[in-house]
Image (cartoon, rainbow, N blue to C red; front, side):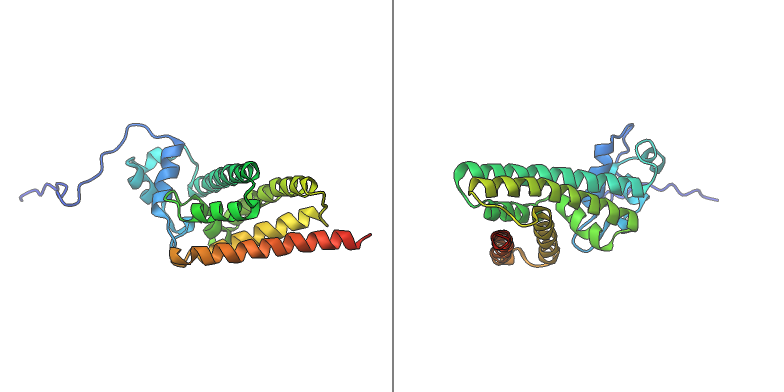
Length: 217
């Protein structure tokens, strides 16, 4: 009997496997596999290992399972976005531009960024497992707390106060993420319209909060 030796096709070469792998490499590999129509919950361990160029067993040196990787990716996405949006708010304050407008523009820029980190938060919060949704909820609460502090500071600079600033920050955060989730599946050409709509809605929320606070007196 003649034995058959399988060799990689030149058109579909087998990617070389790496001797070692870092957590960041596996997170990057998972990011490459998700997209507007695919969530982390549909990505398999073998797919991540193949994309990272490692044997499946090597995956377990960094993560217990795909759930742990997904939650780590959600945490990474949240931290990265908070840093980016926070920097944008600081730049807006220093240049006298509208903090609301700059923050929304930055959010939409991240929605279209190649790294897809924002997609992780938007997609997994809607269609992921319960563990994923809890991780996304935790990140949203971090956003809300940081935004609450900024809103109080910005209102004080304008000699104003907000009614229930914690609720204001929650309303803003949930609105922006809900609008972002909808915009994710729309063509980028519609982004200026979405930015204008979100910015106007946020001004309405903040103005309403200030009016409510004034009416208390």
